[in-house]
Amino acid sequence: MDFLSSFHQYSDWGVLLLRLAIAIIFLVHGFPKITGAKQMTAAMGKPQMAGFFTFLGIAEVLGAIGMTLGLLTQPAALGLAIVMISAIGLKTGTMKAPFTSHQGPSWEFDFILLAANLSLLIAGGGAYALDRVVFDI
Image (cartoon, rainbow, N blue to C red; front, side, top):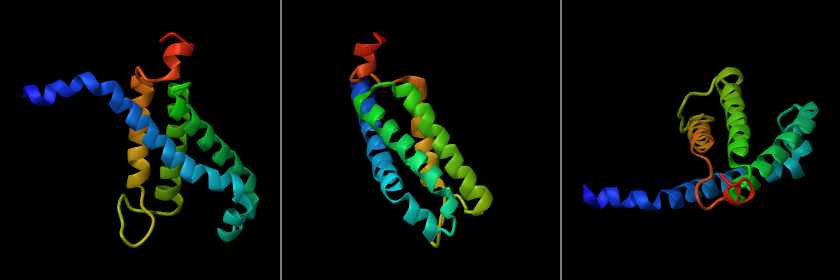
């Protein structure tokens, strides 16, 4: 057991890794919403949603930048958690998607991103975050 408990001293590195993983995912999914909102919504048959997709993409990219830098980590985590709650609502409500599926949309990926963001909302950005420097927390 001493071996496992010795990893506790590296918990701030774990928080940093979690922040960076979240940032990568939201950059990869957010940036195309900014640059291709019209094409994406047209393909969905909902061209009137282009403005919302652009807004959503901007929110995801700004949240990802906050996560990368550890700046405003908790507000960024809250915003990204709200995005994921909305995604889960869309998938479970409108799309009737199951939790997991090999045949179509599902929401287990959204769920783990929600949990990760809620964890950072509670824990904060850790020692390797600009929040510590800027806000002295």
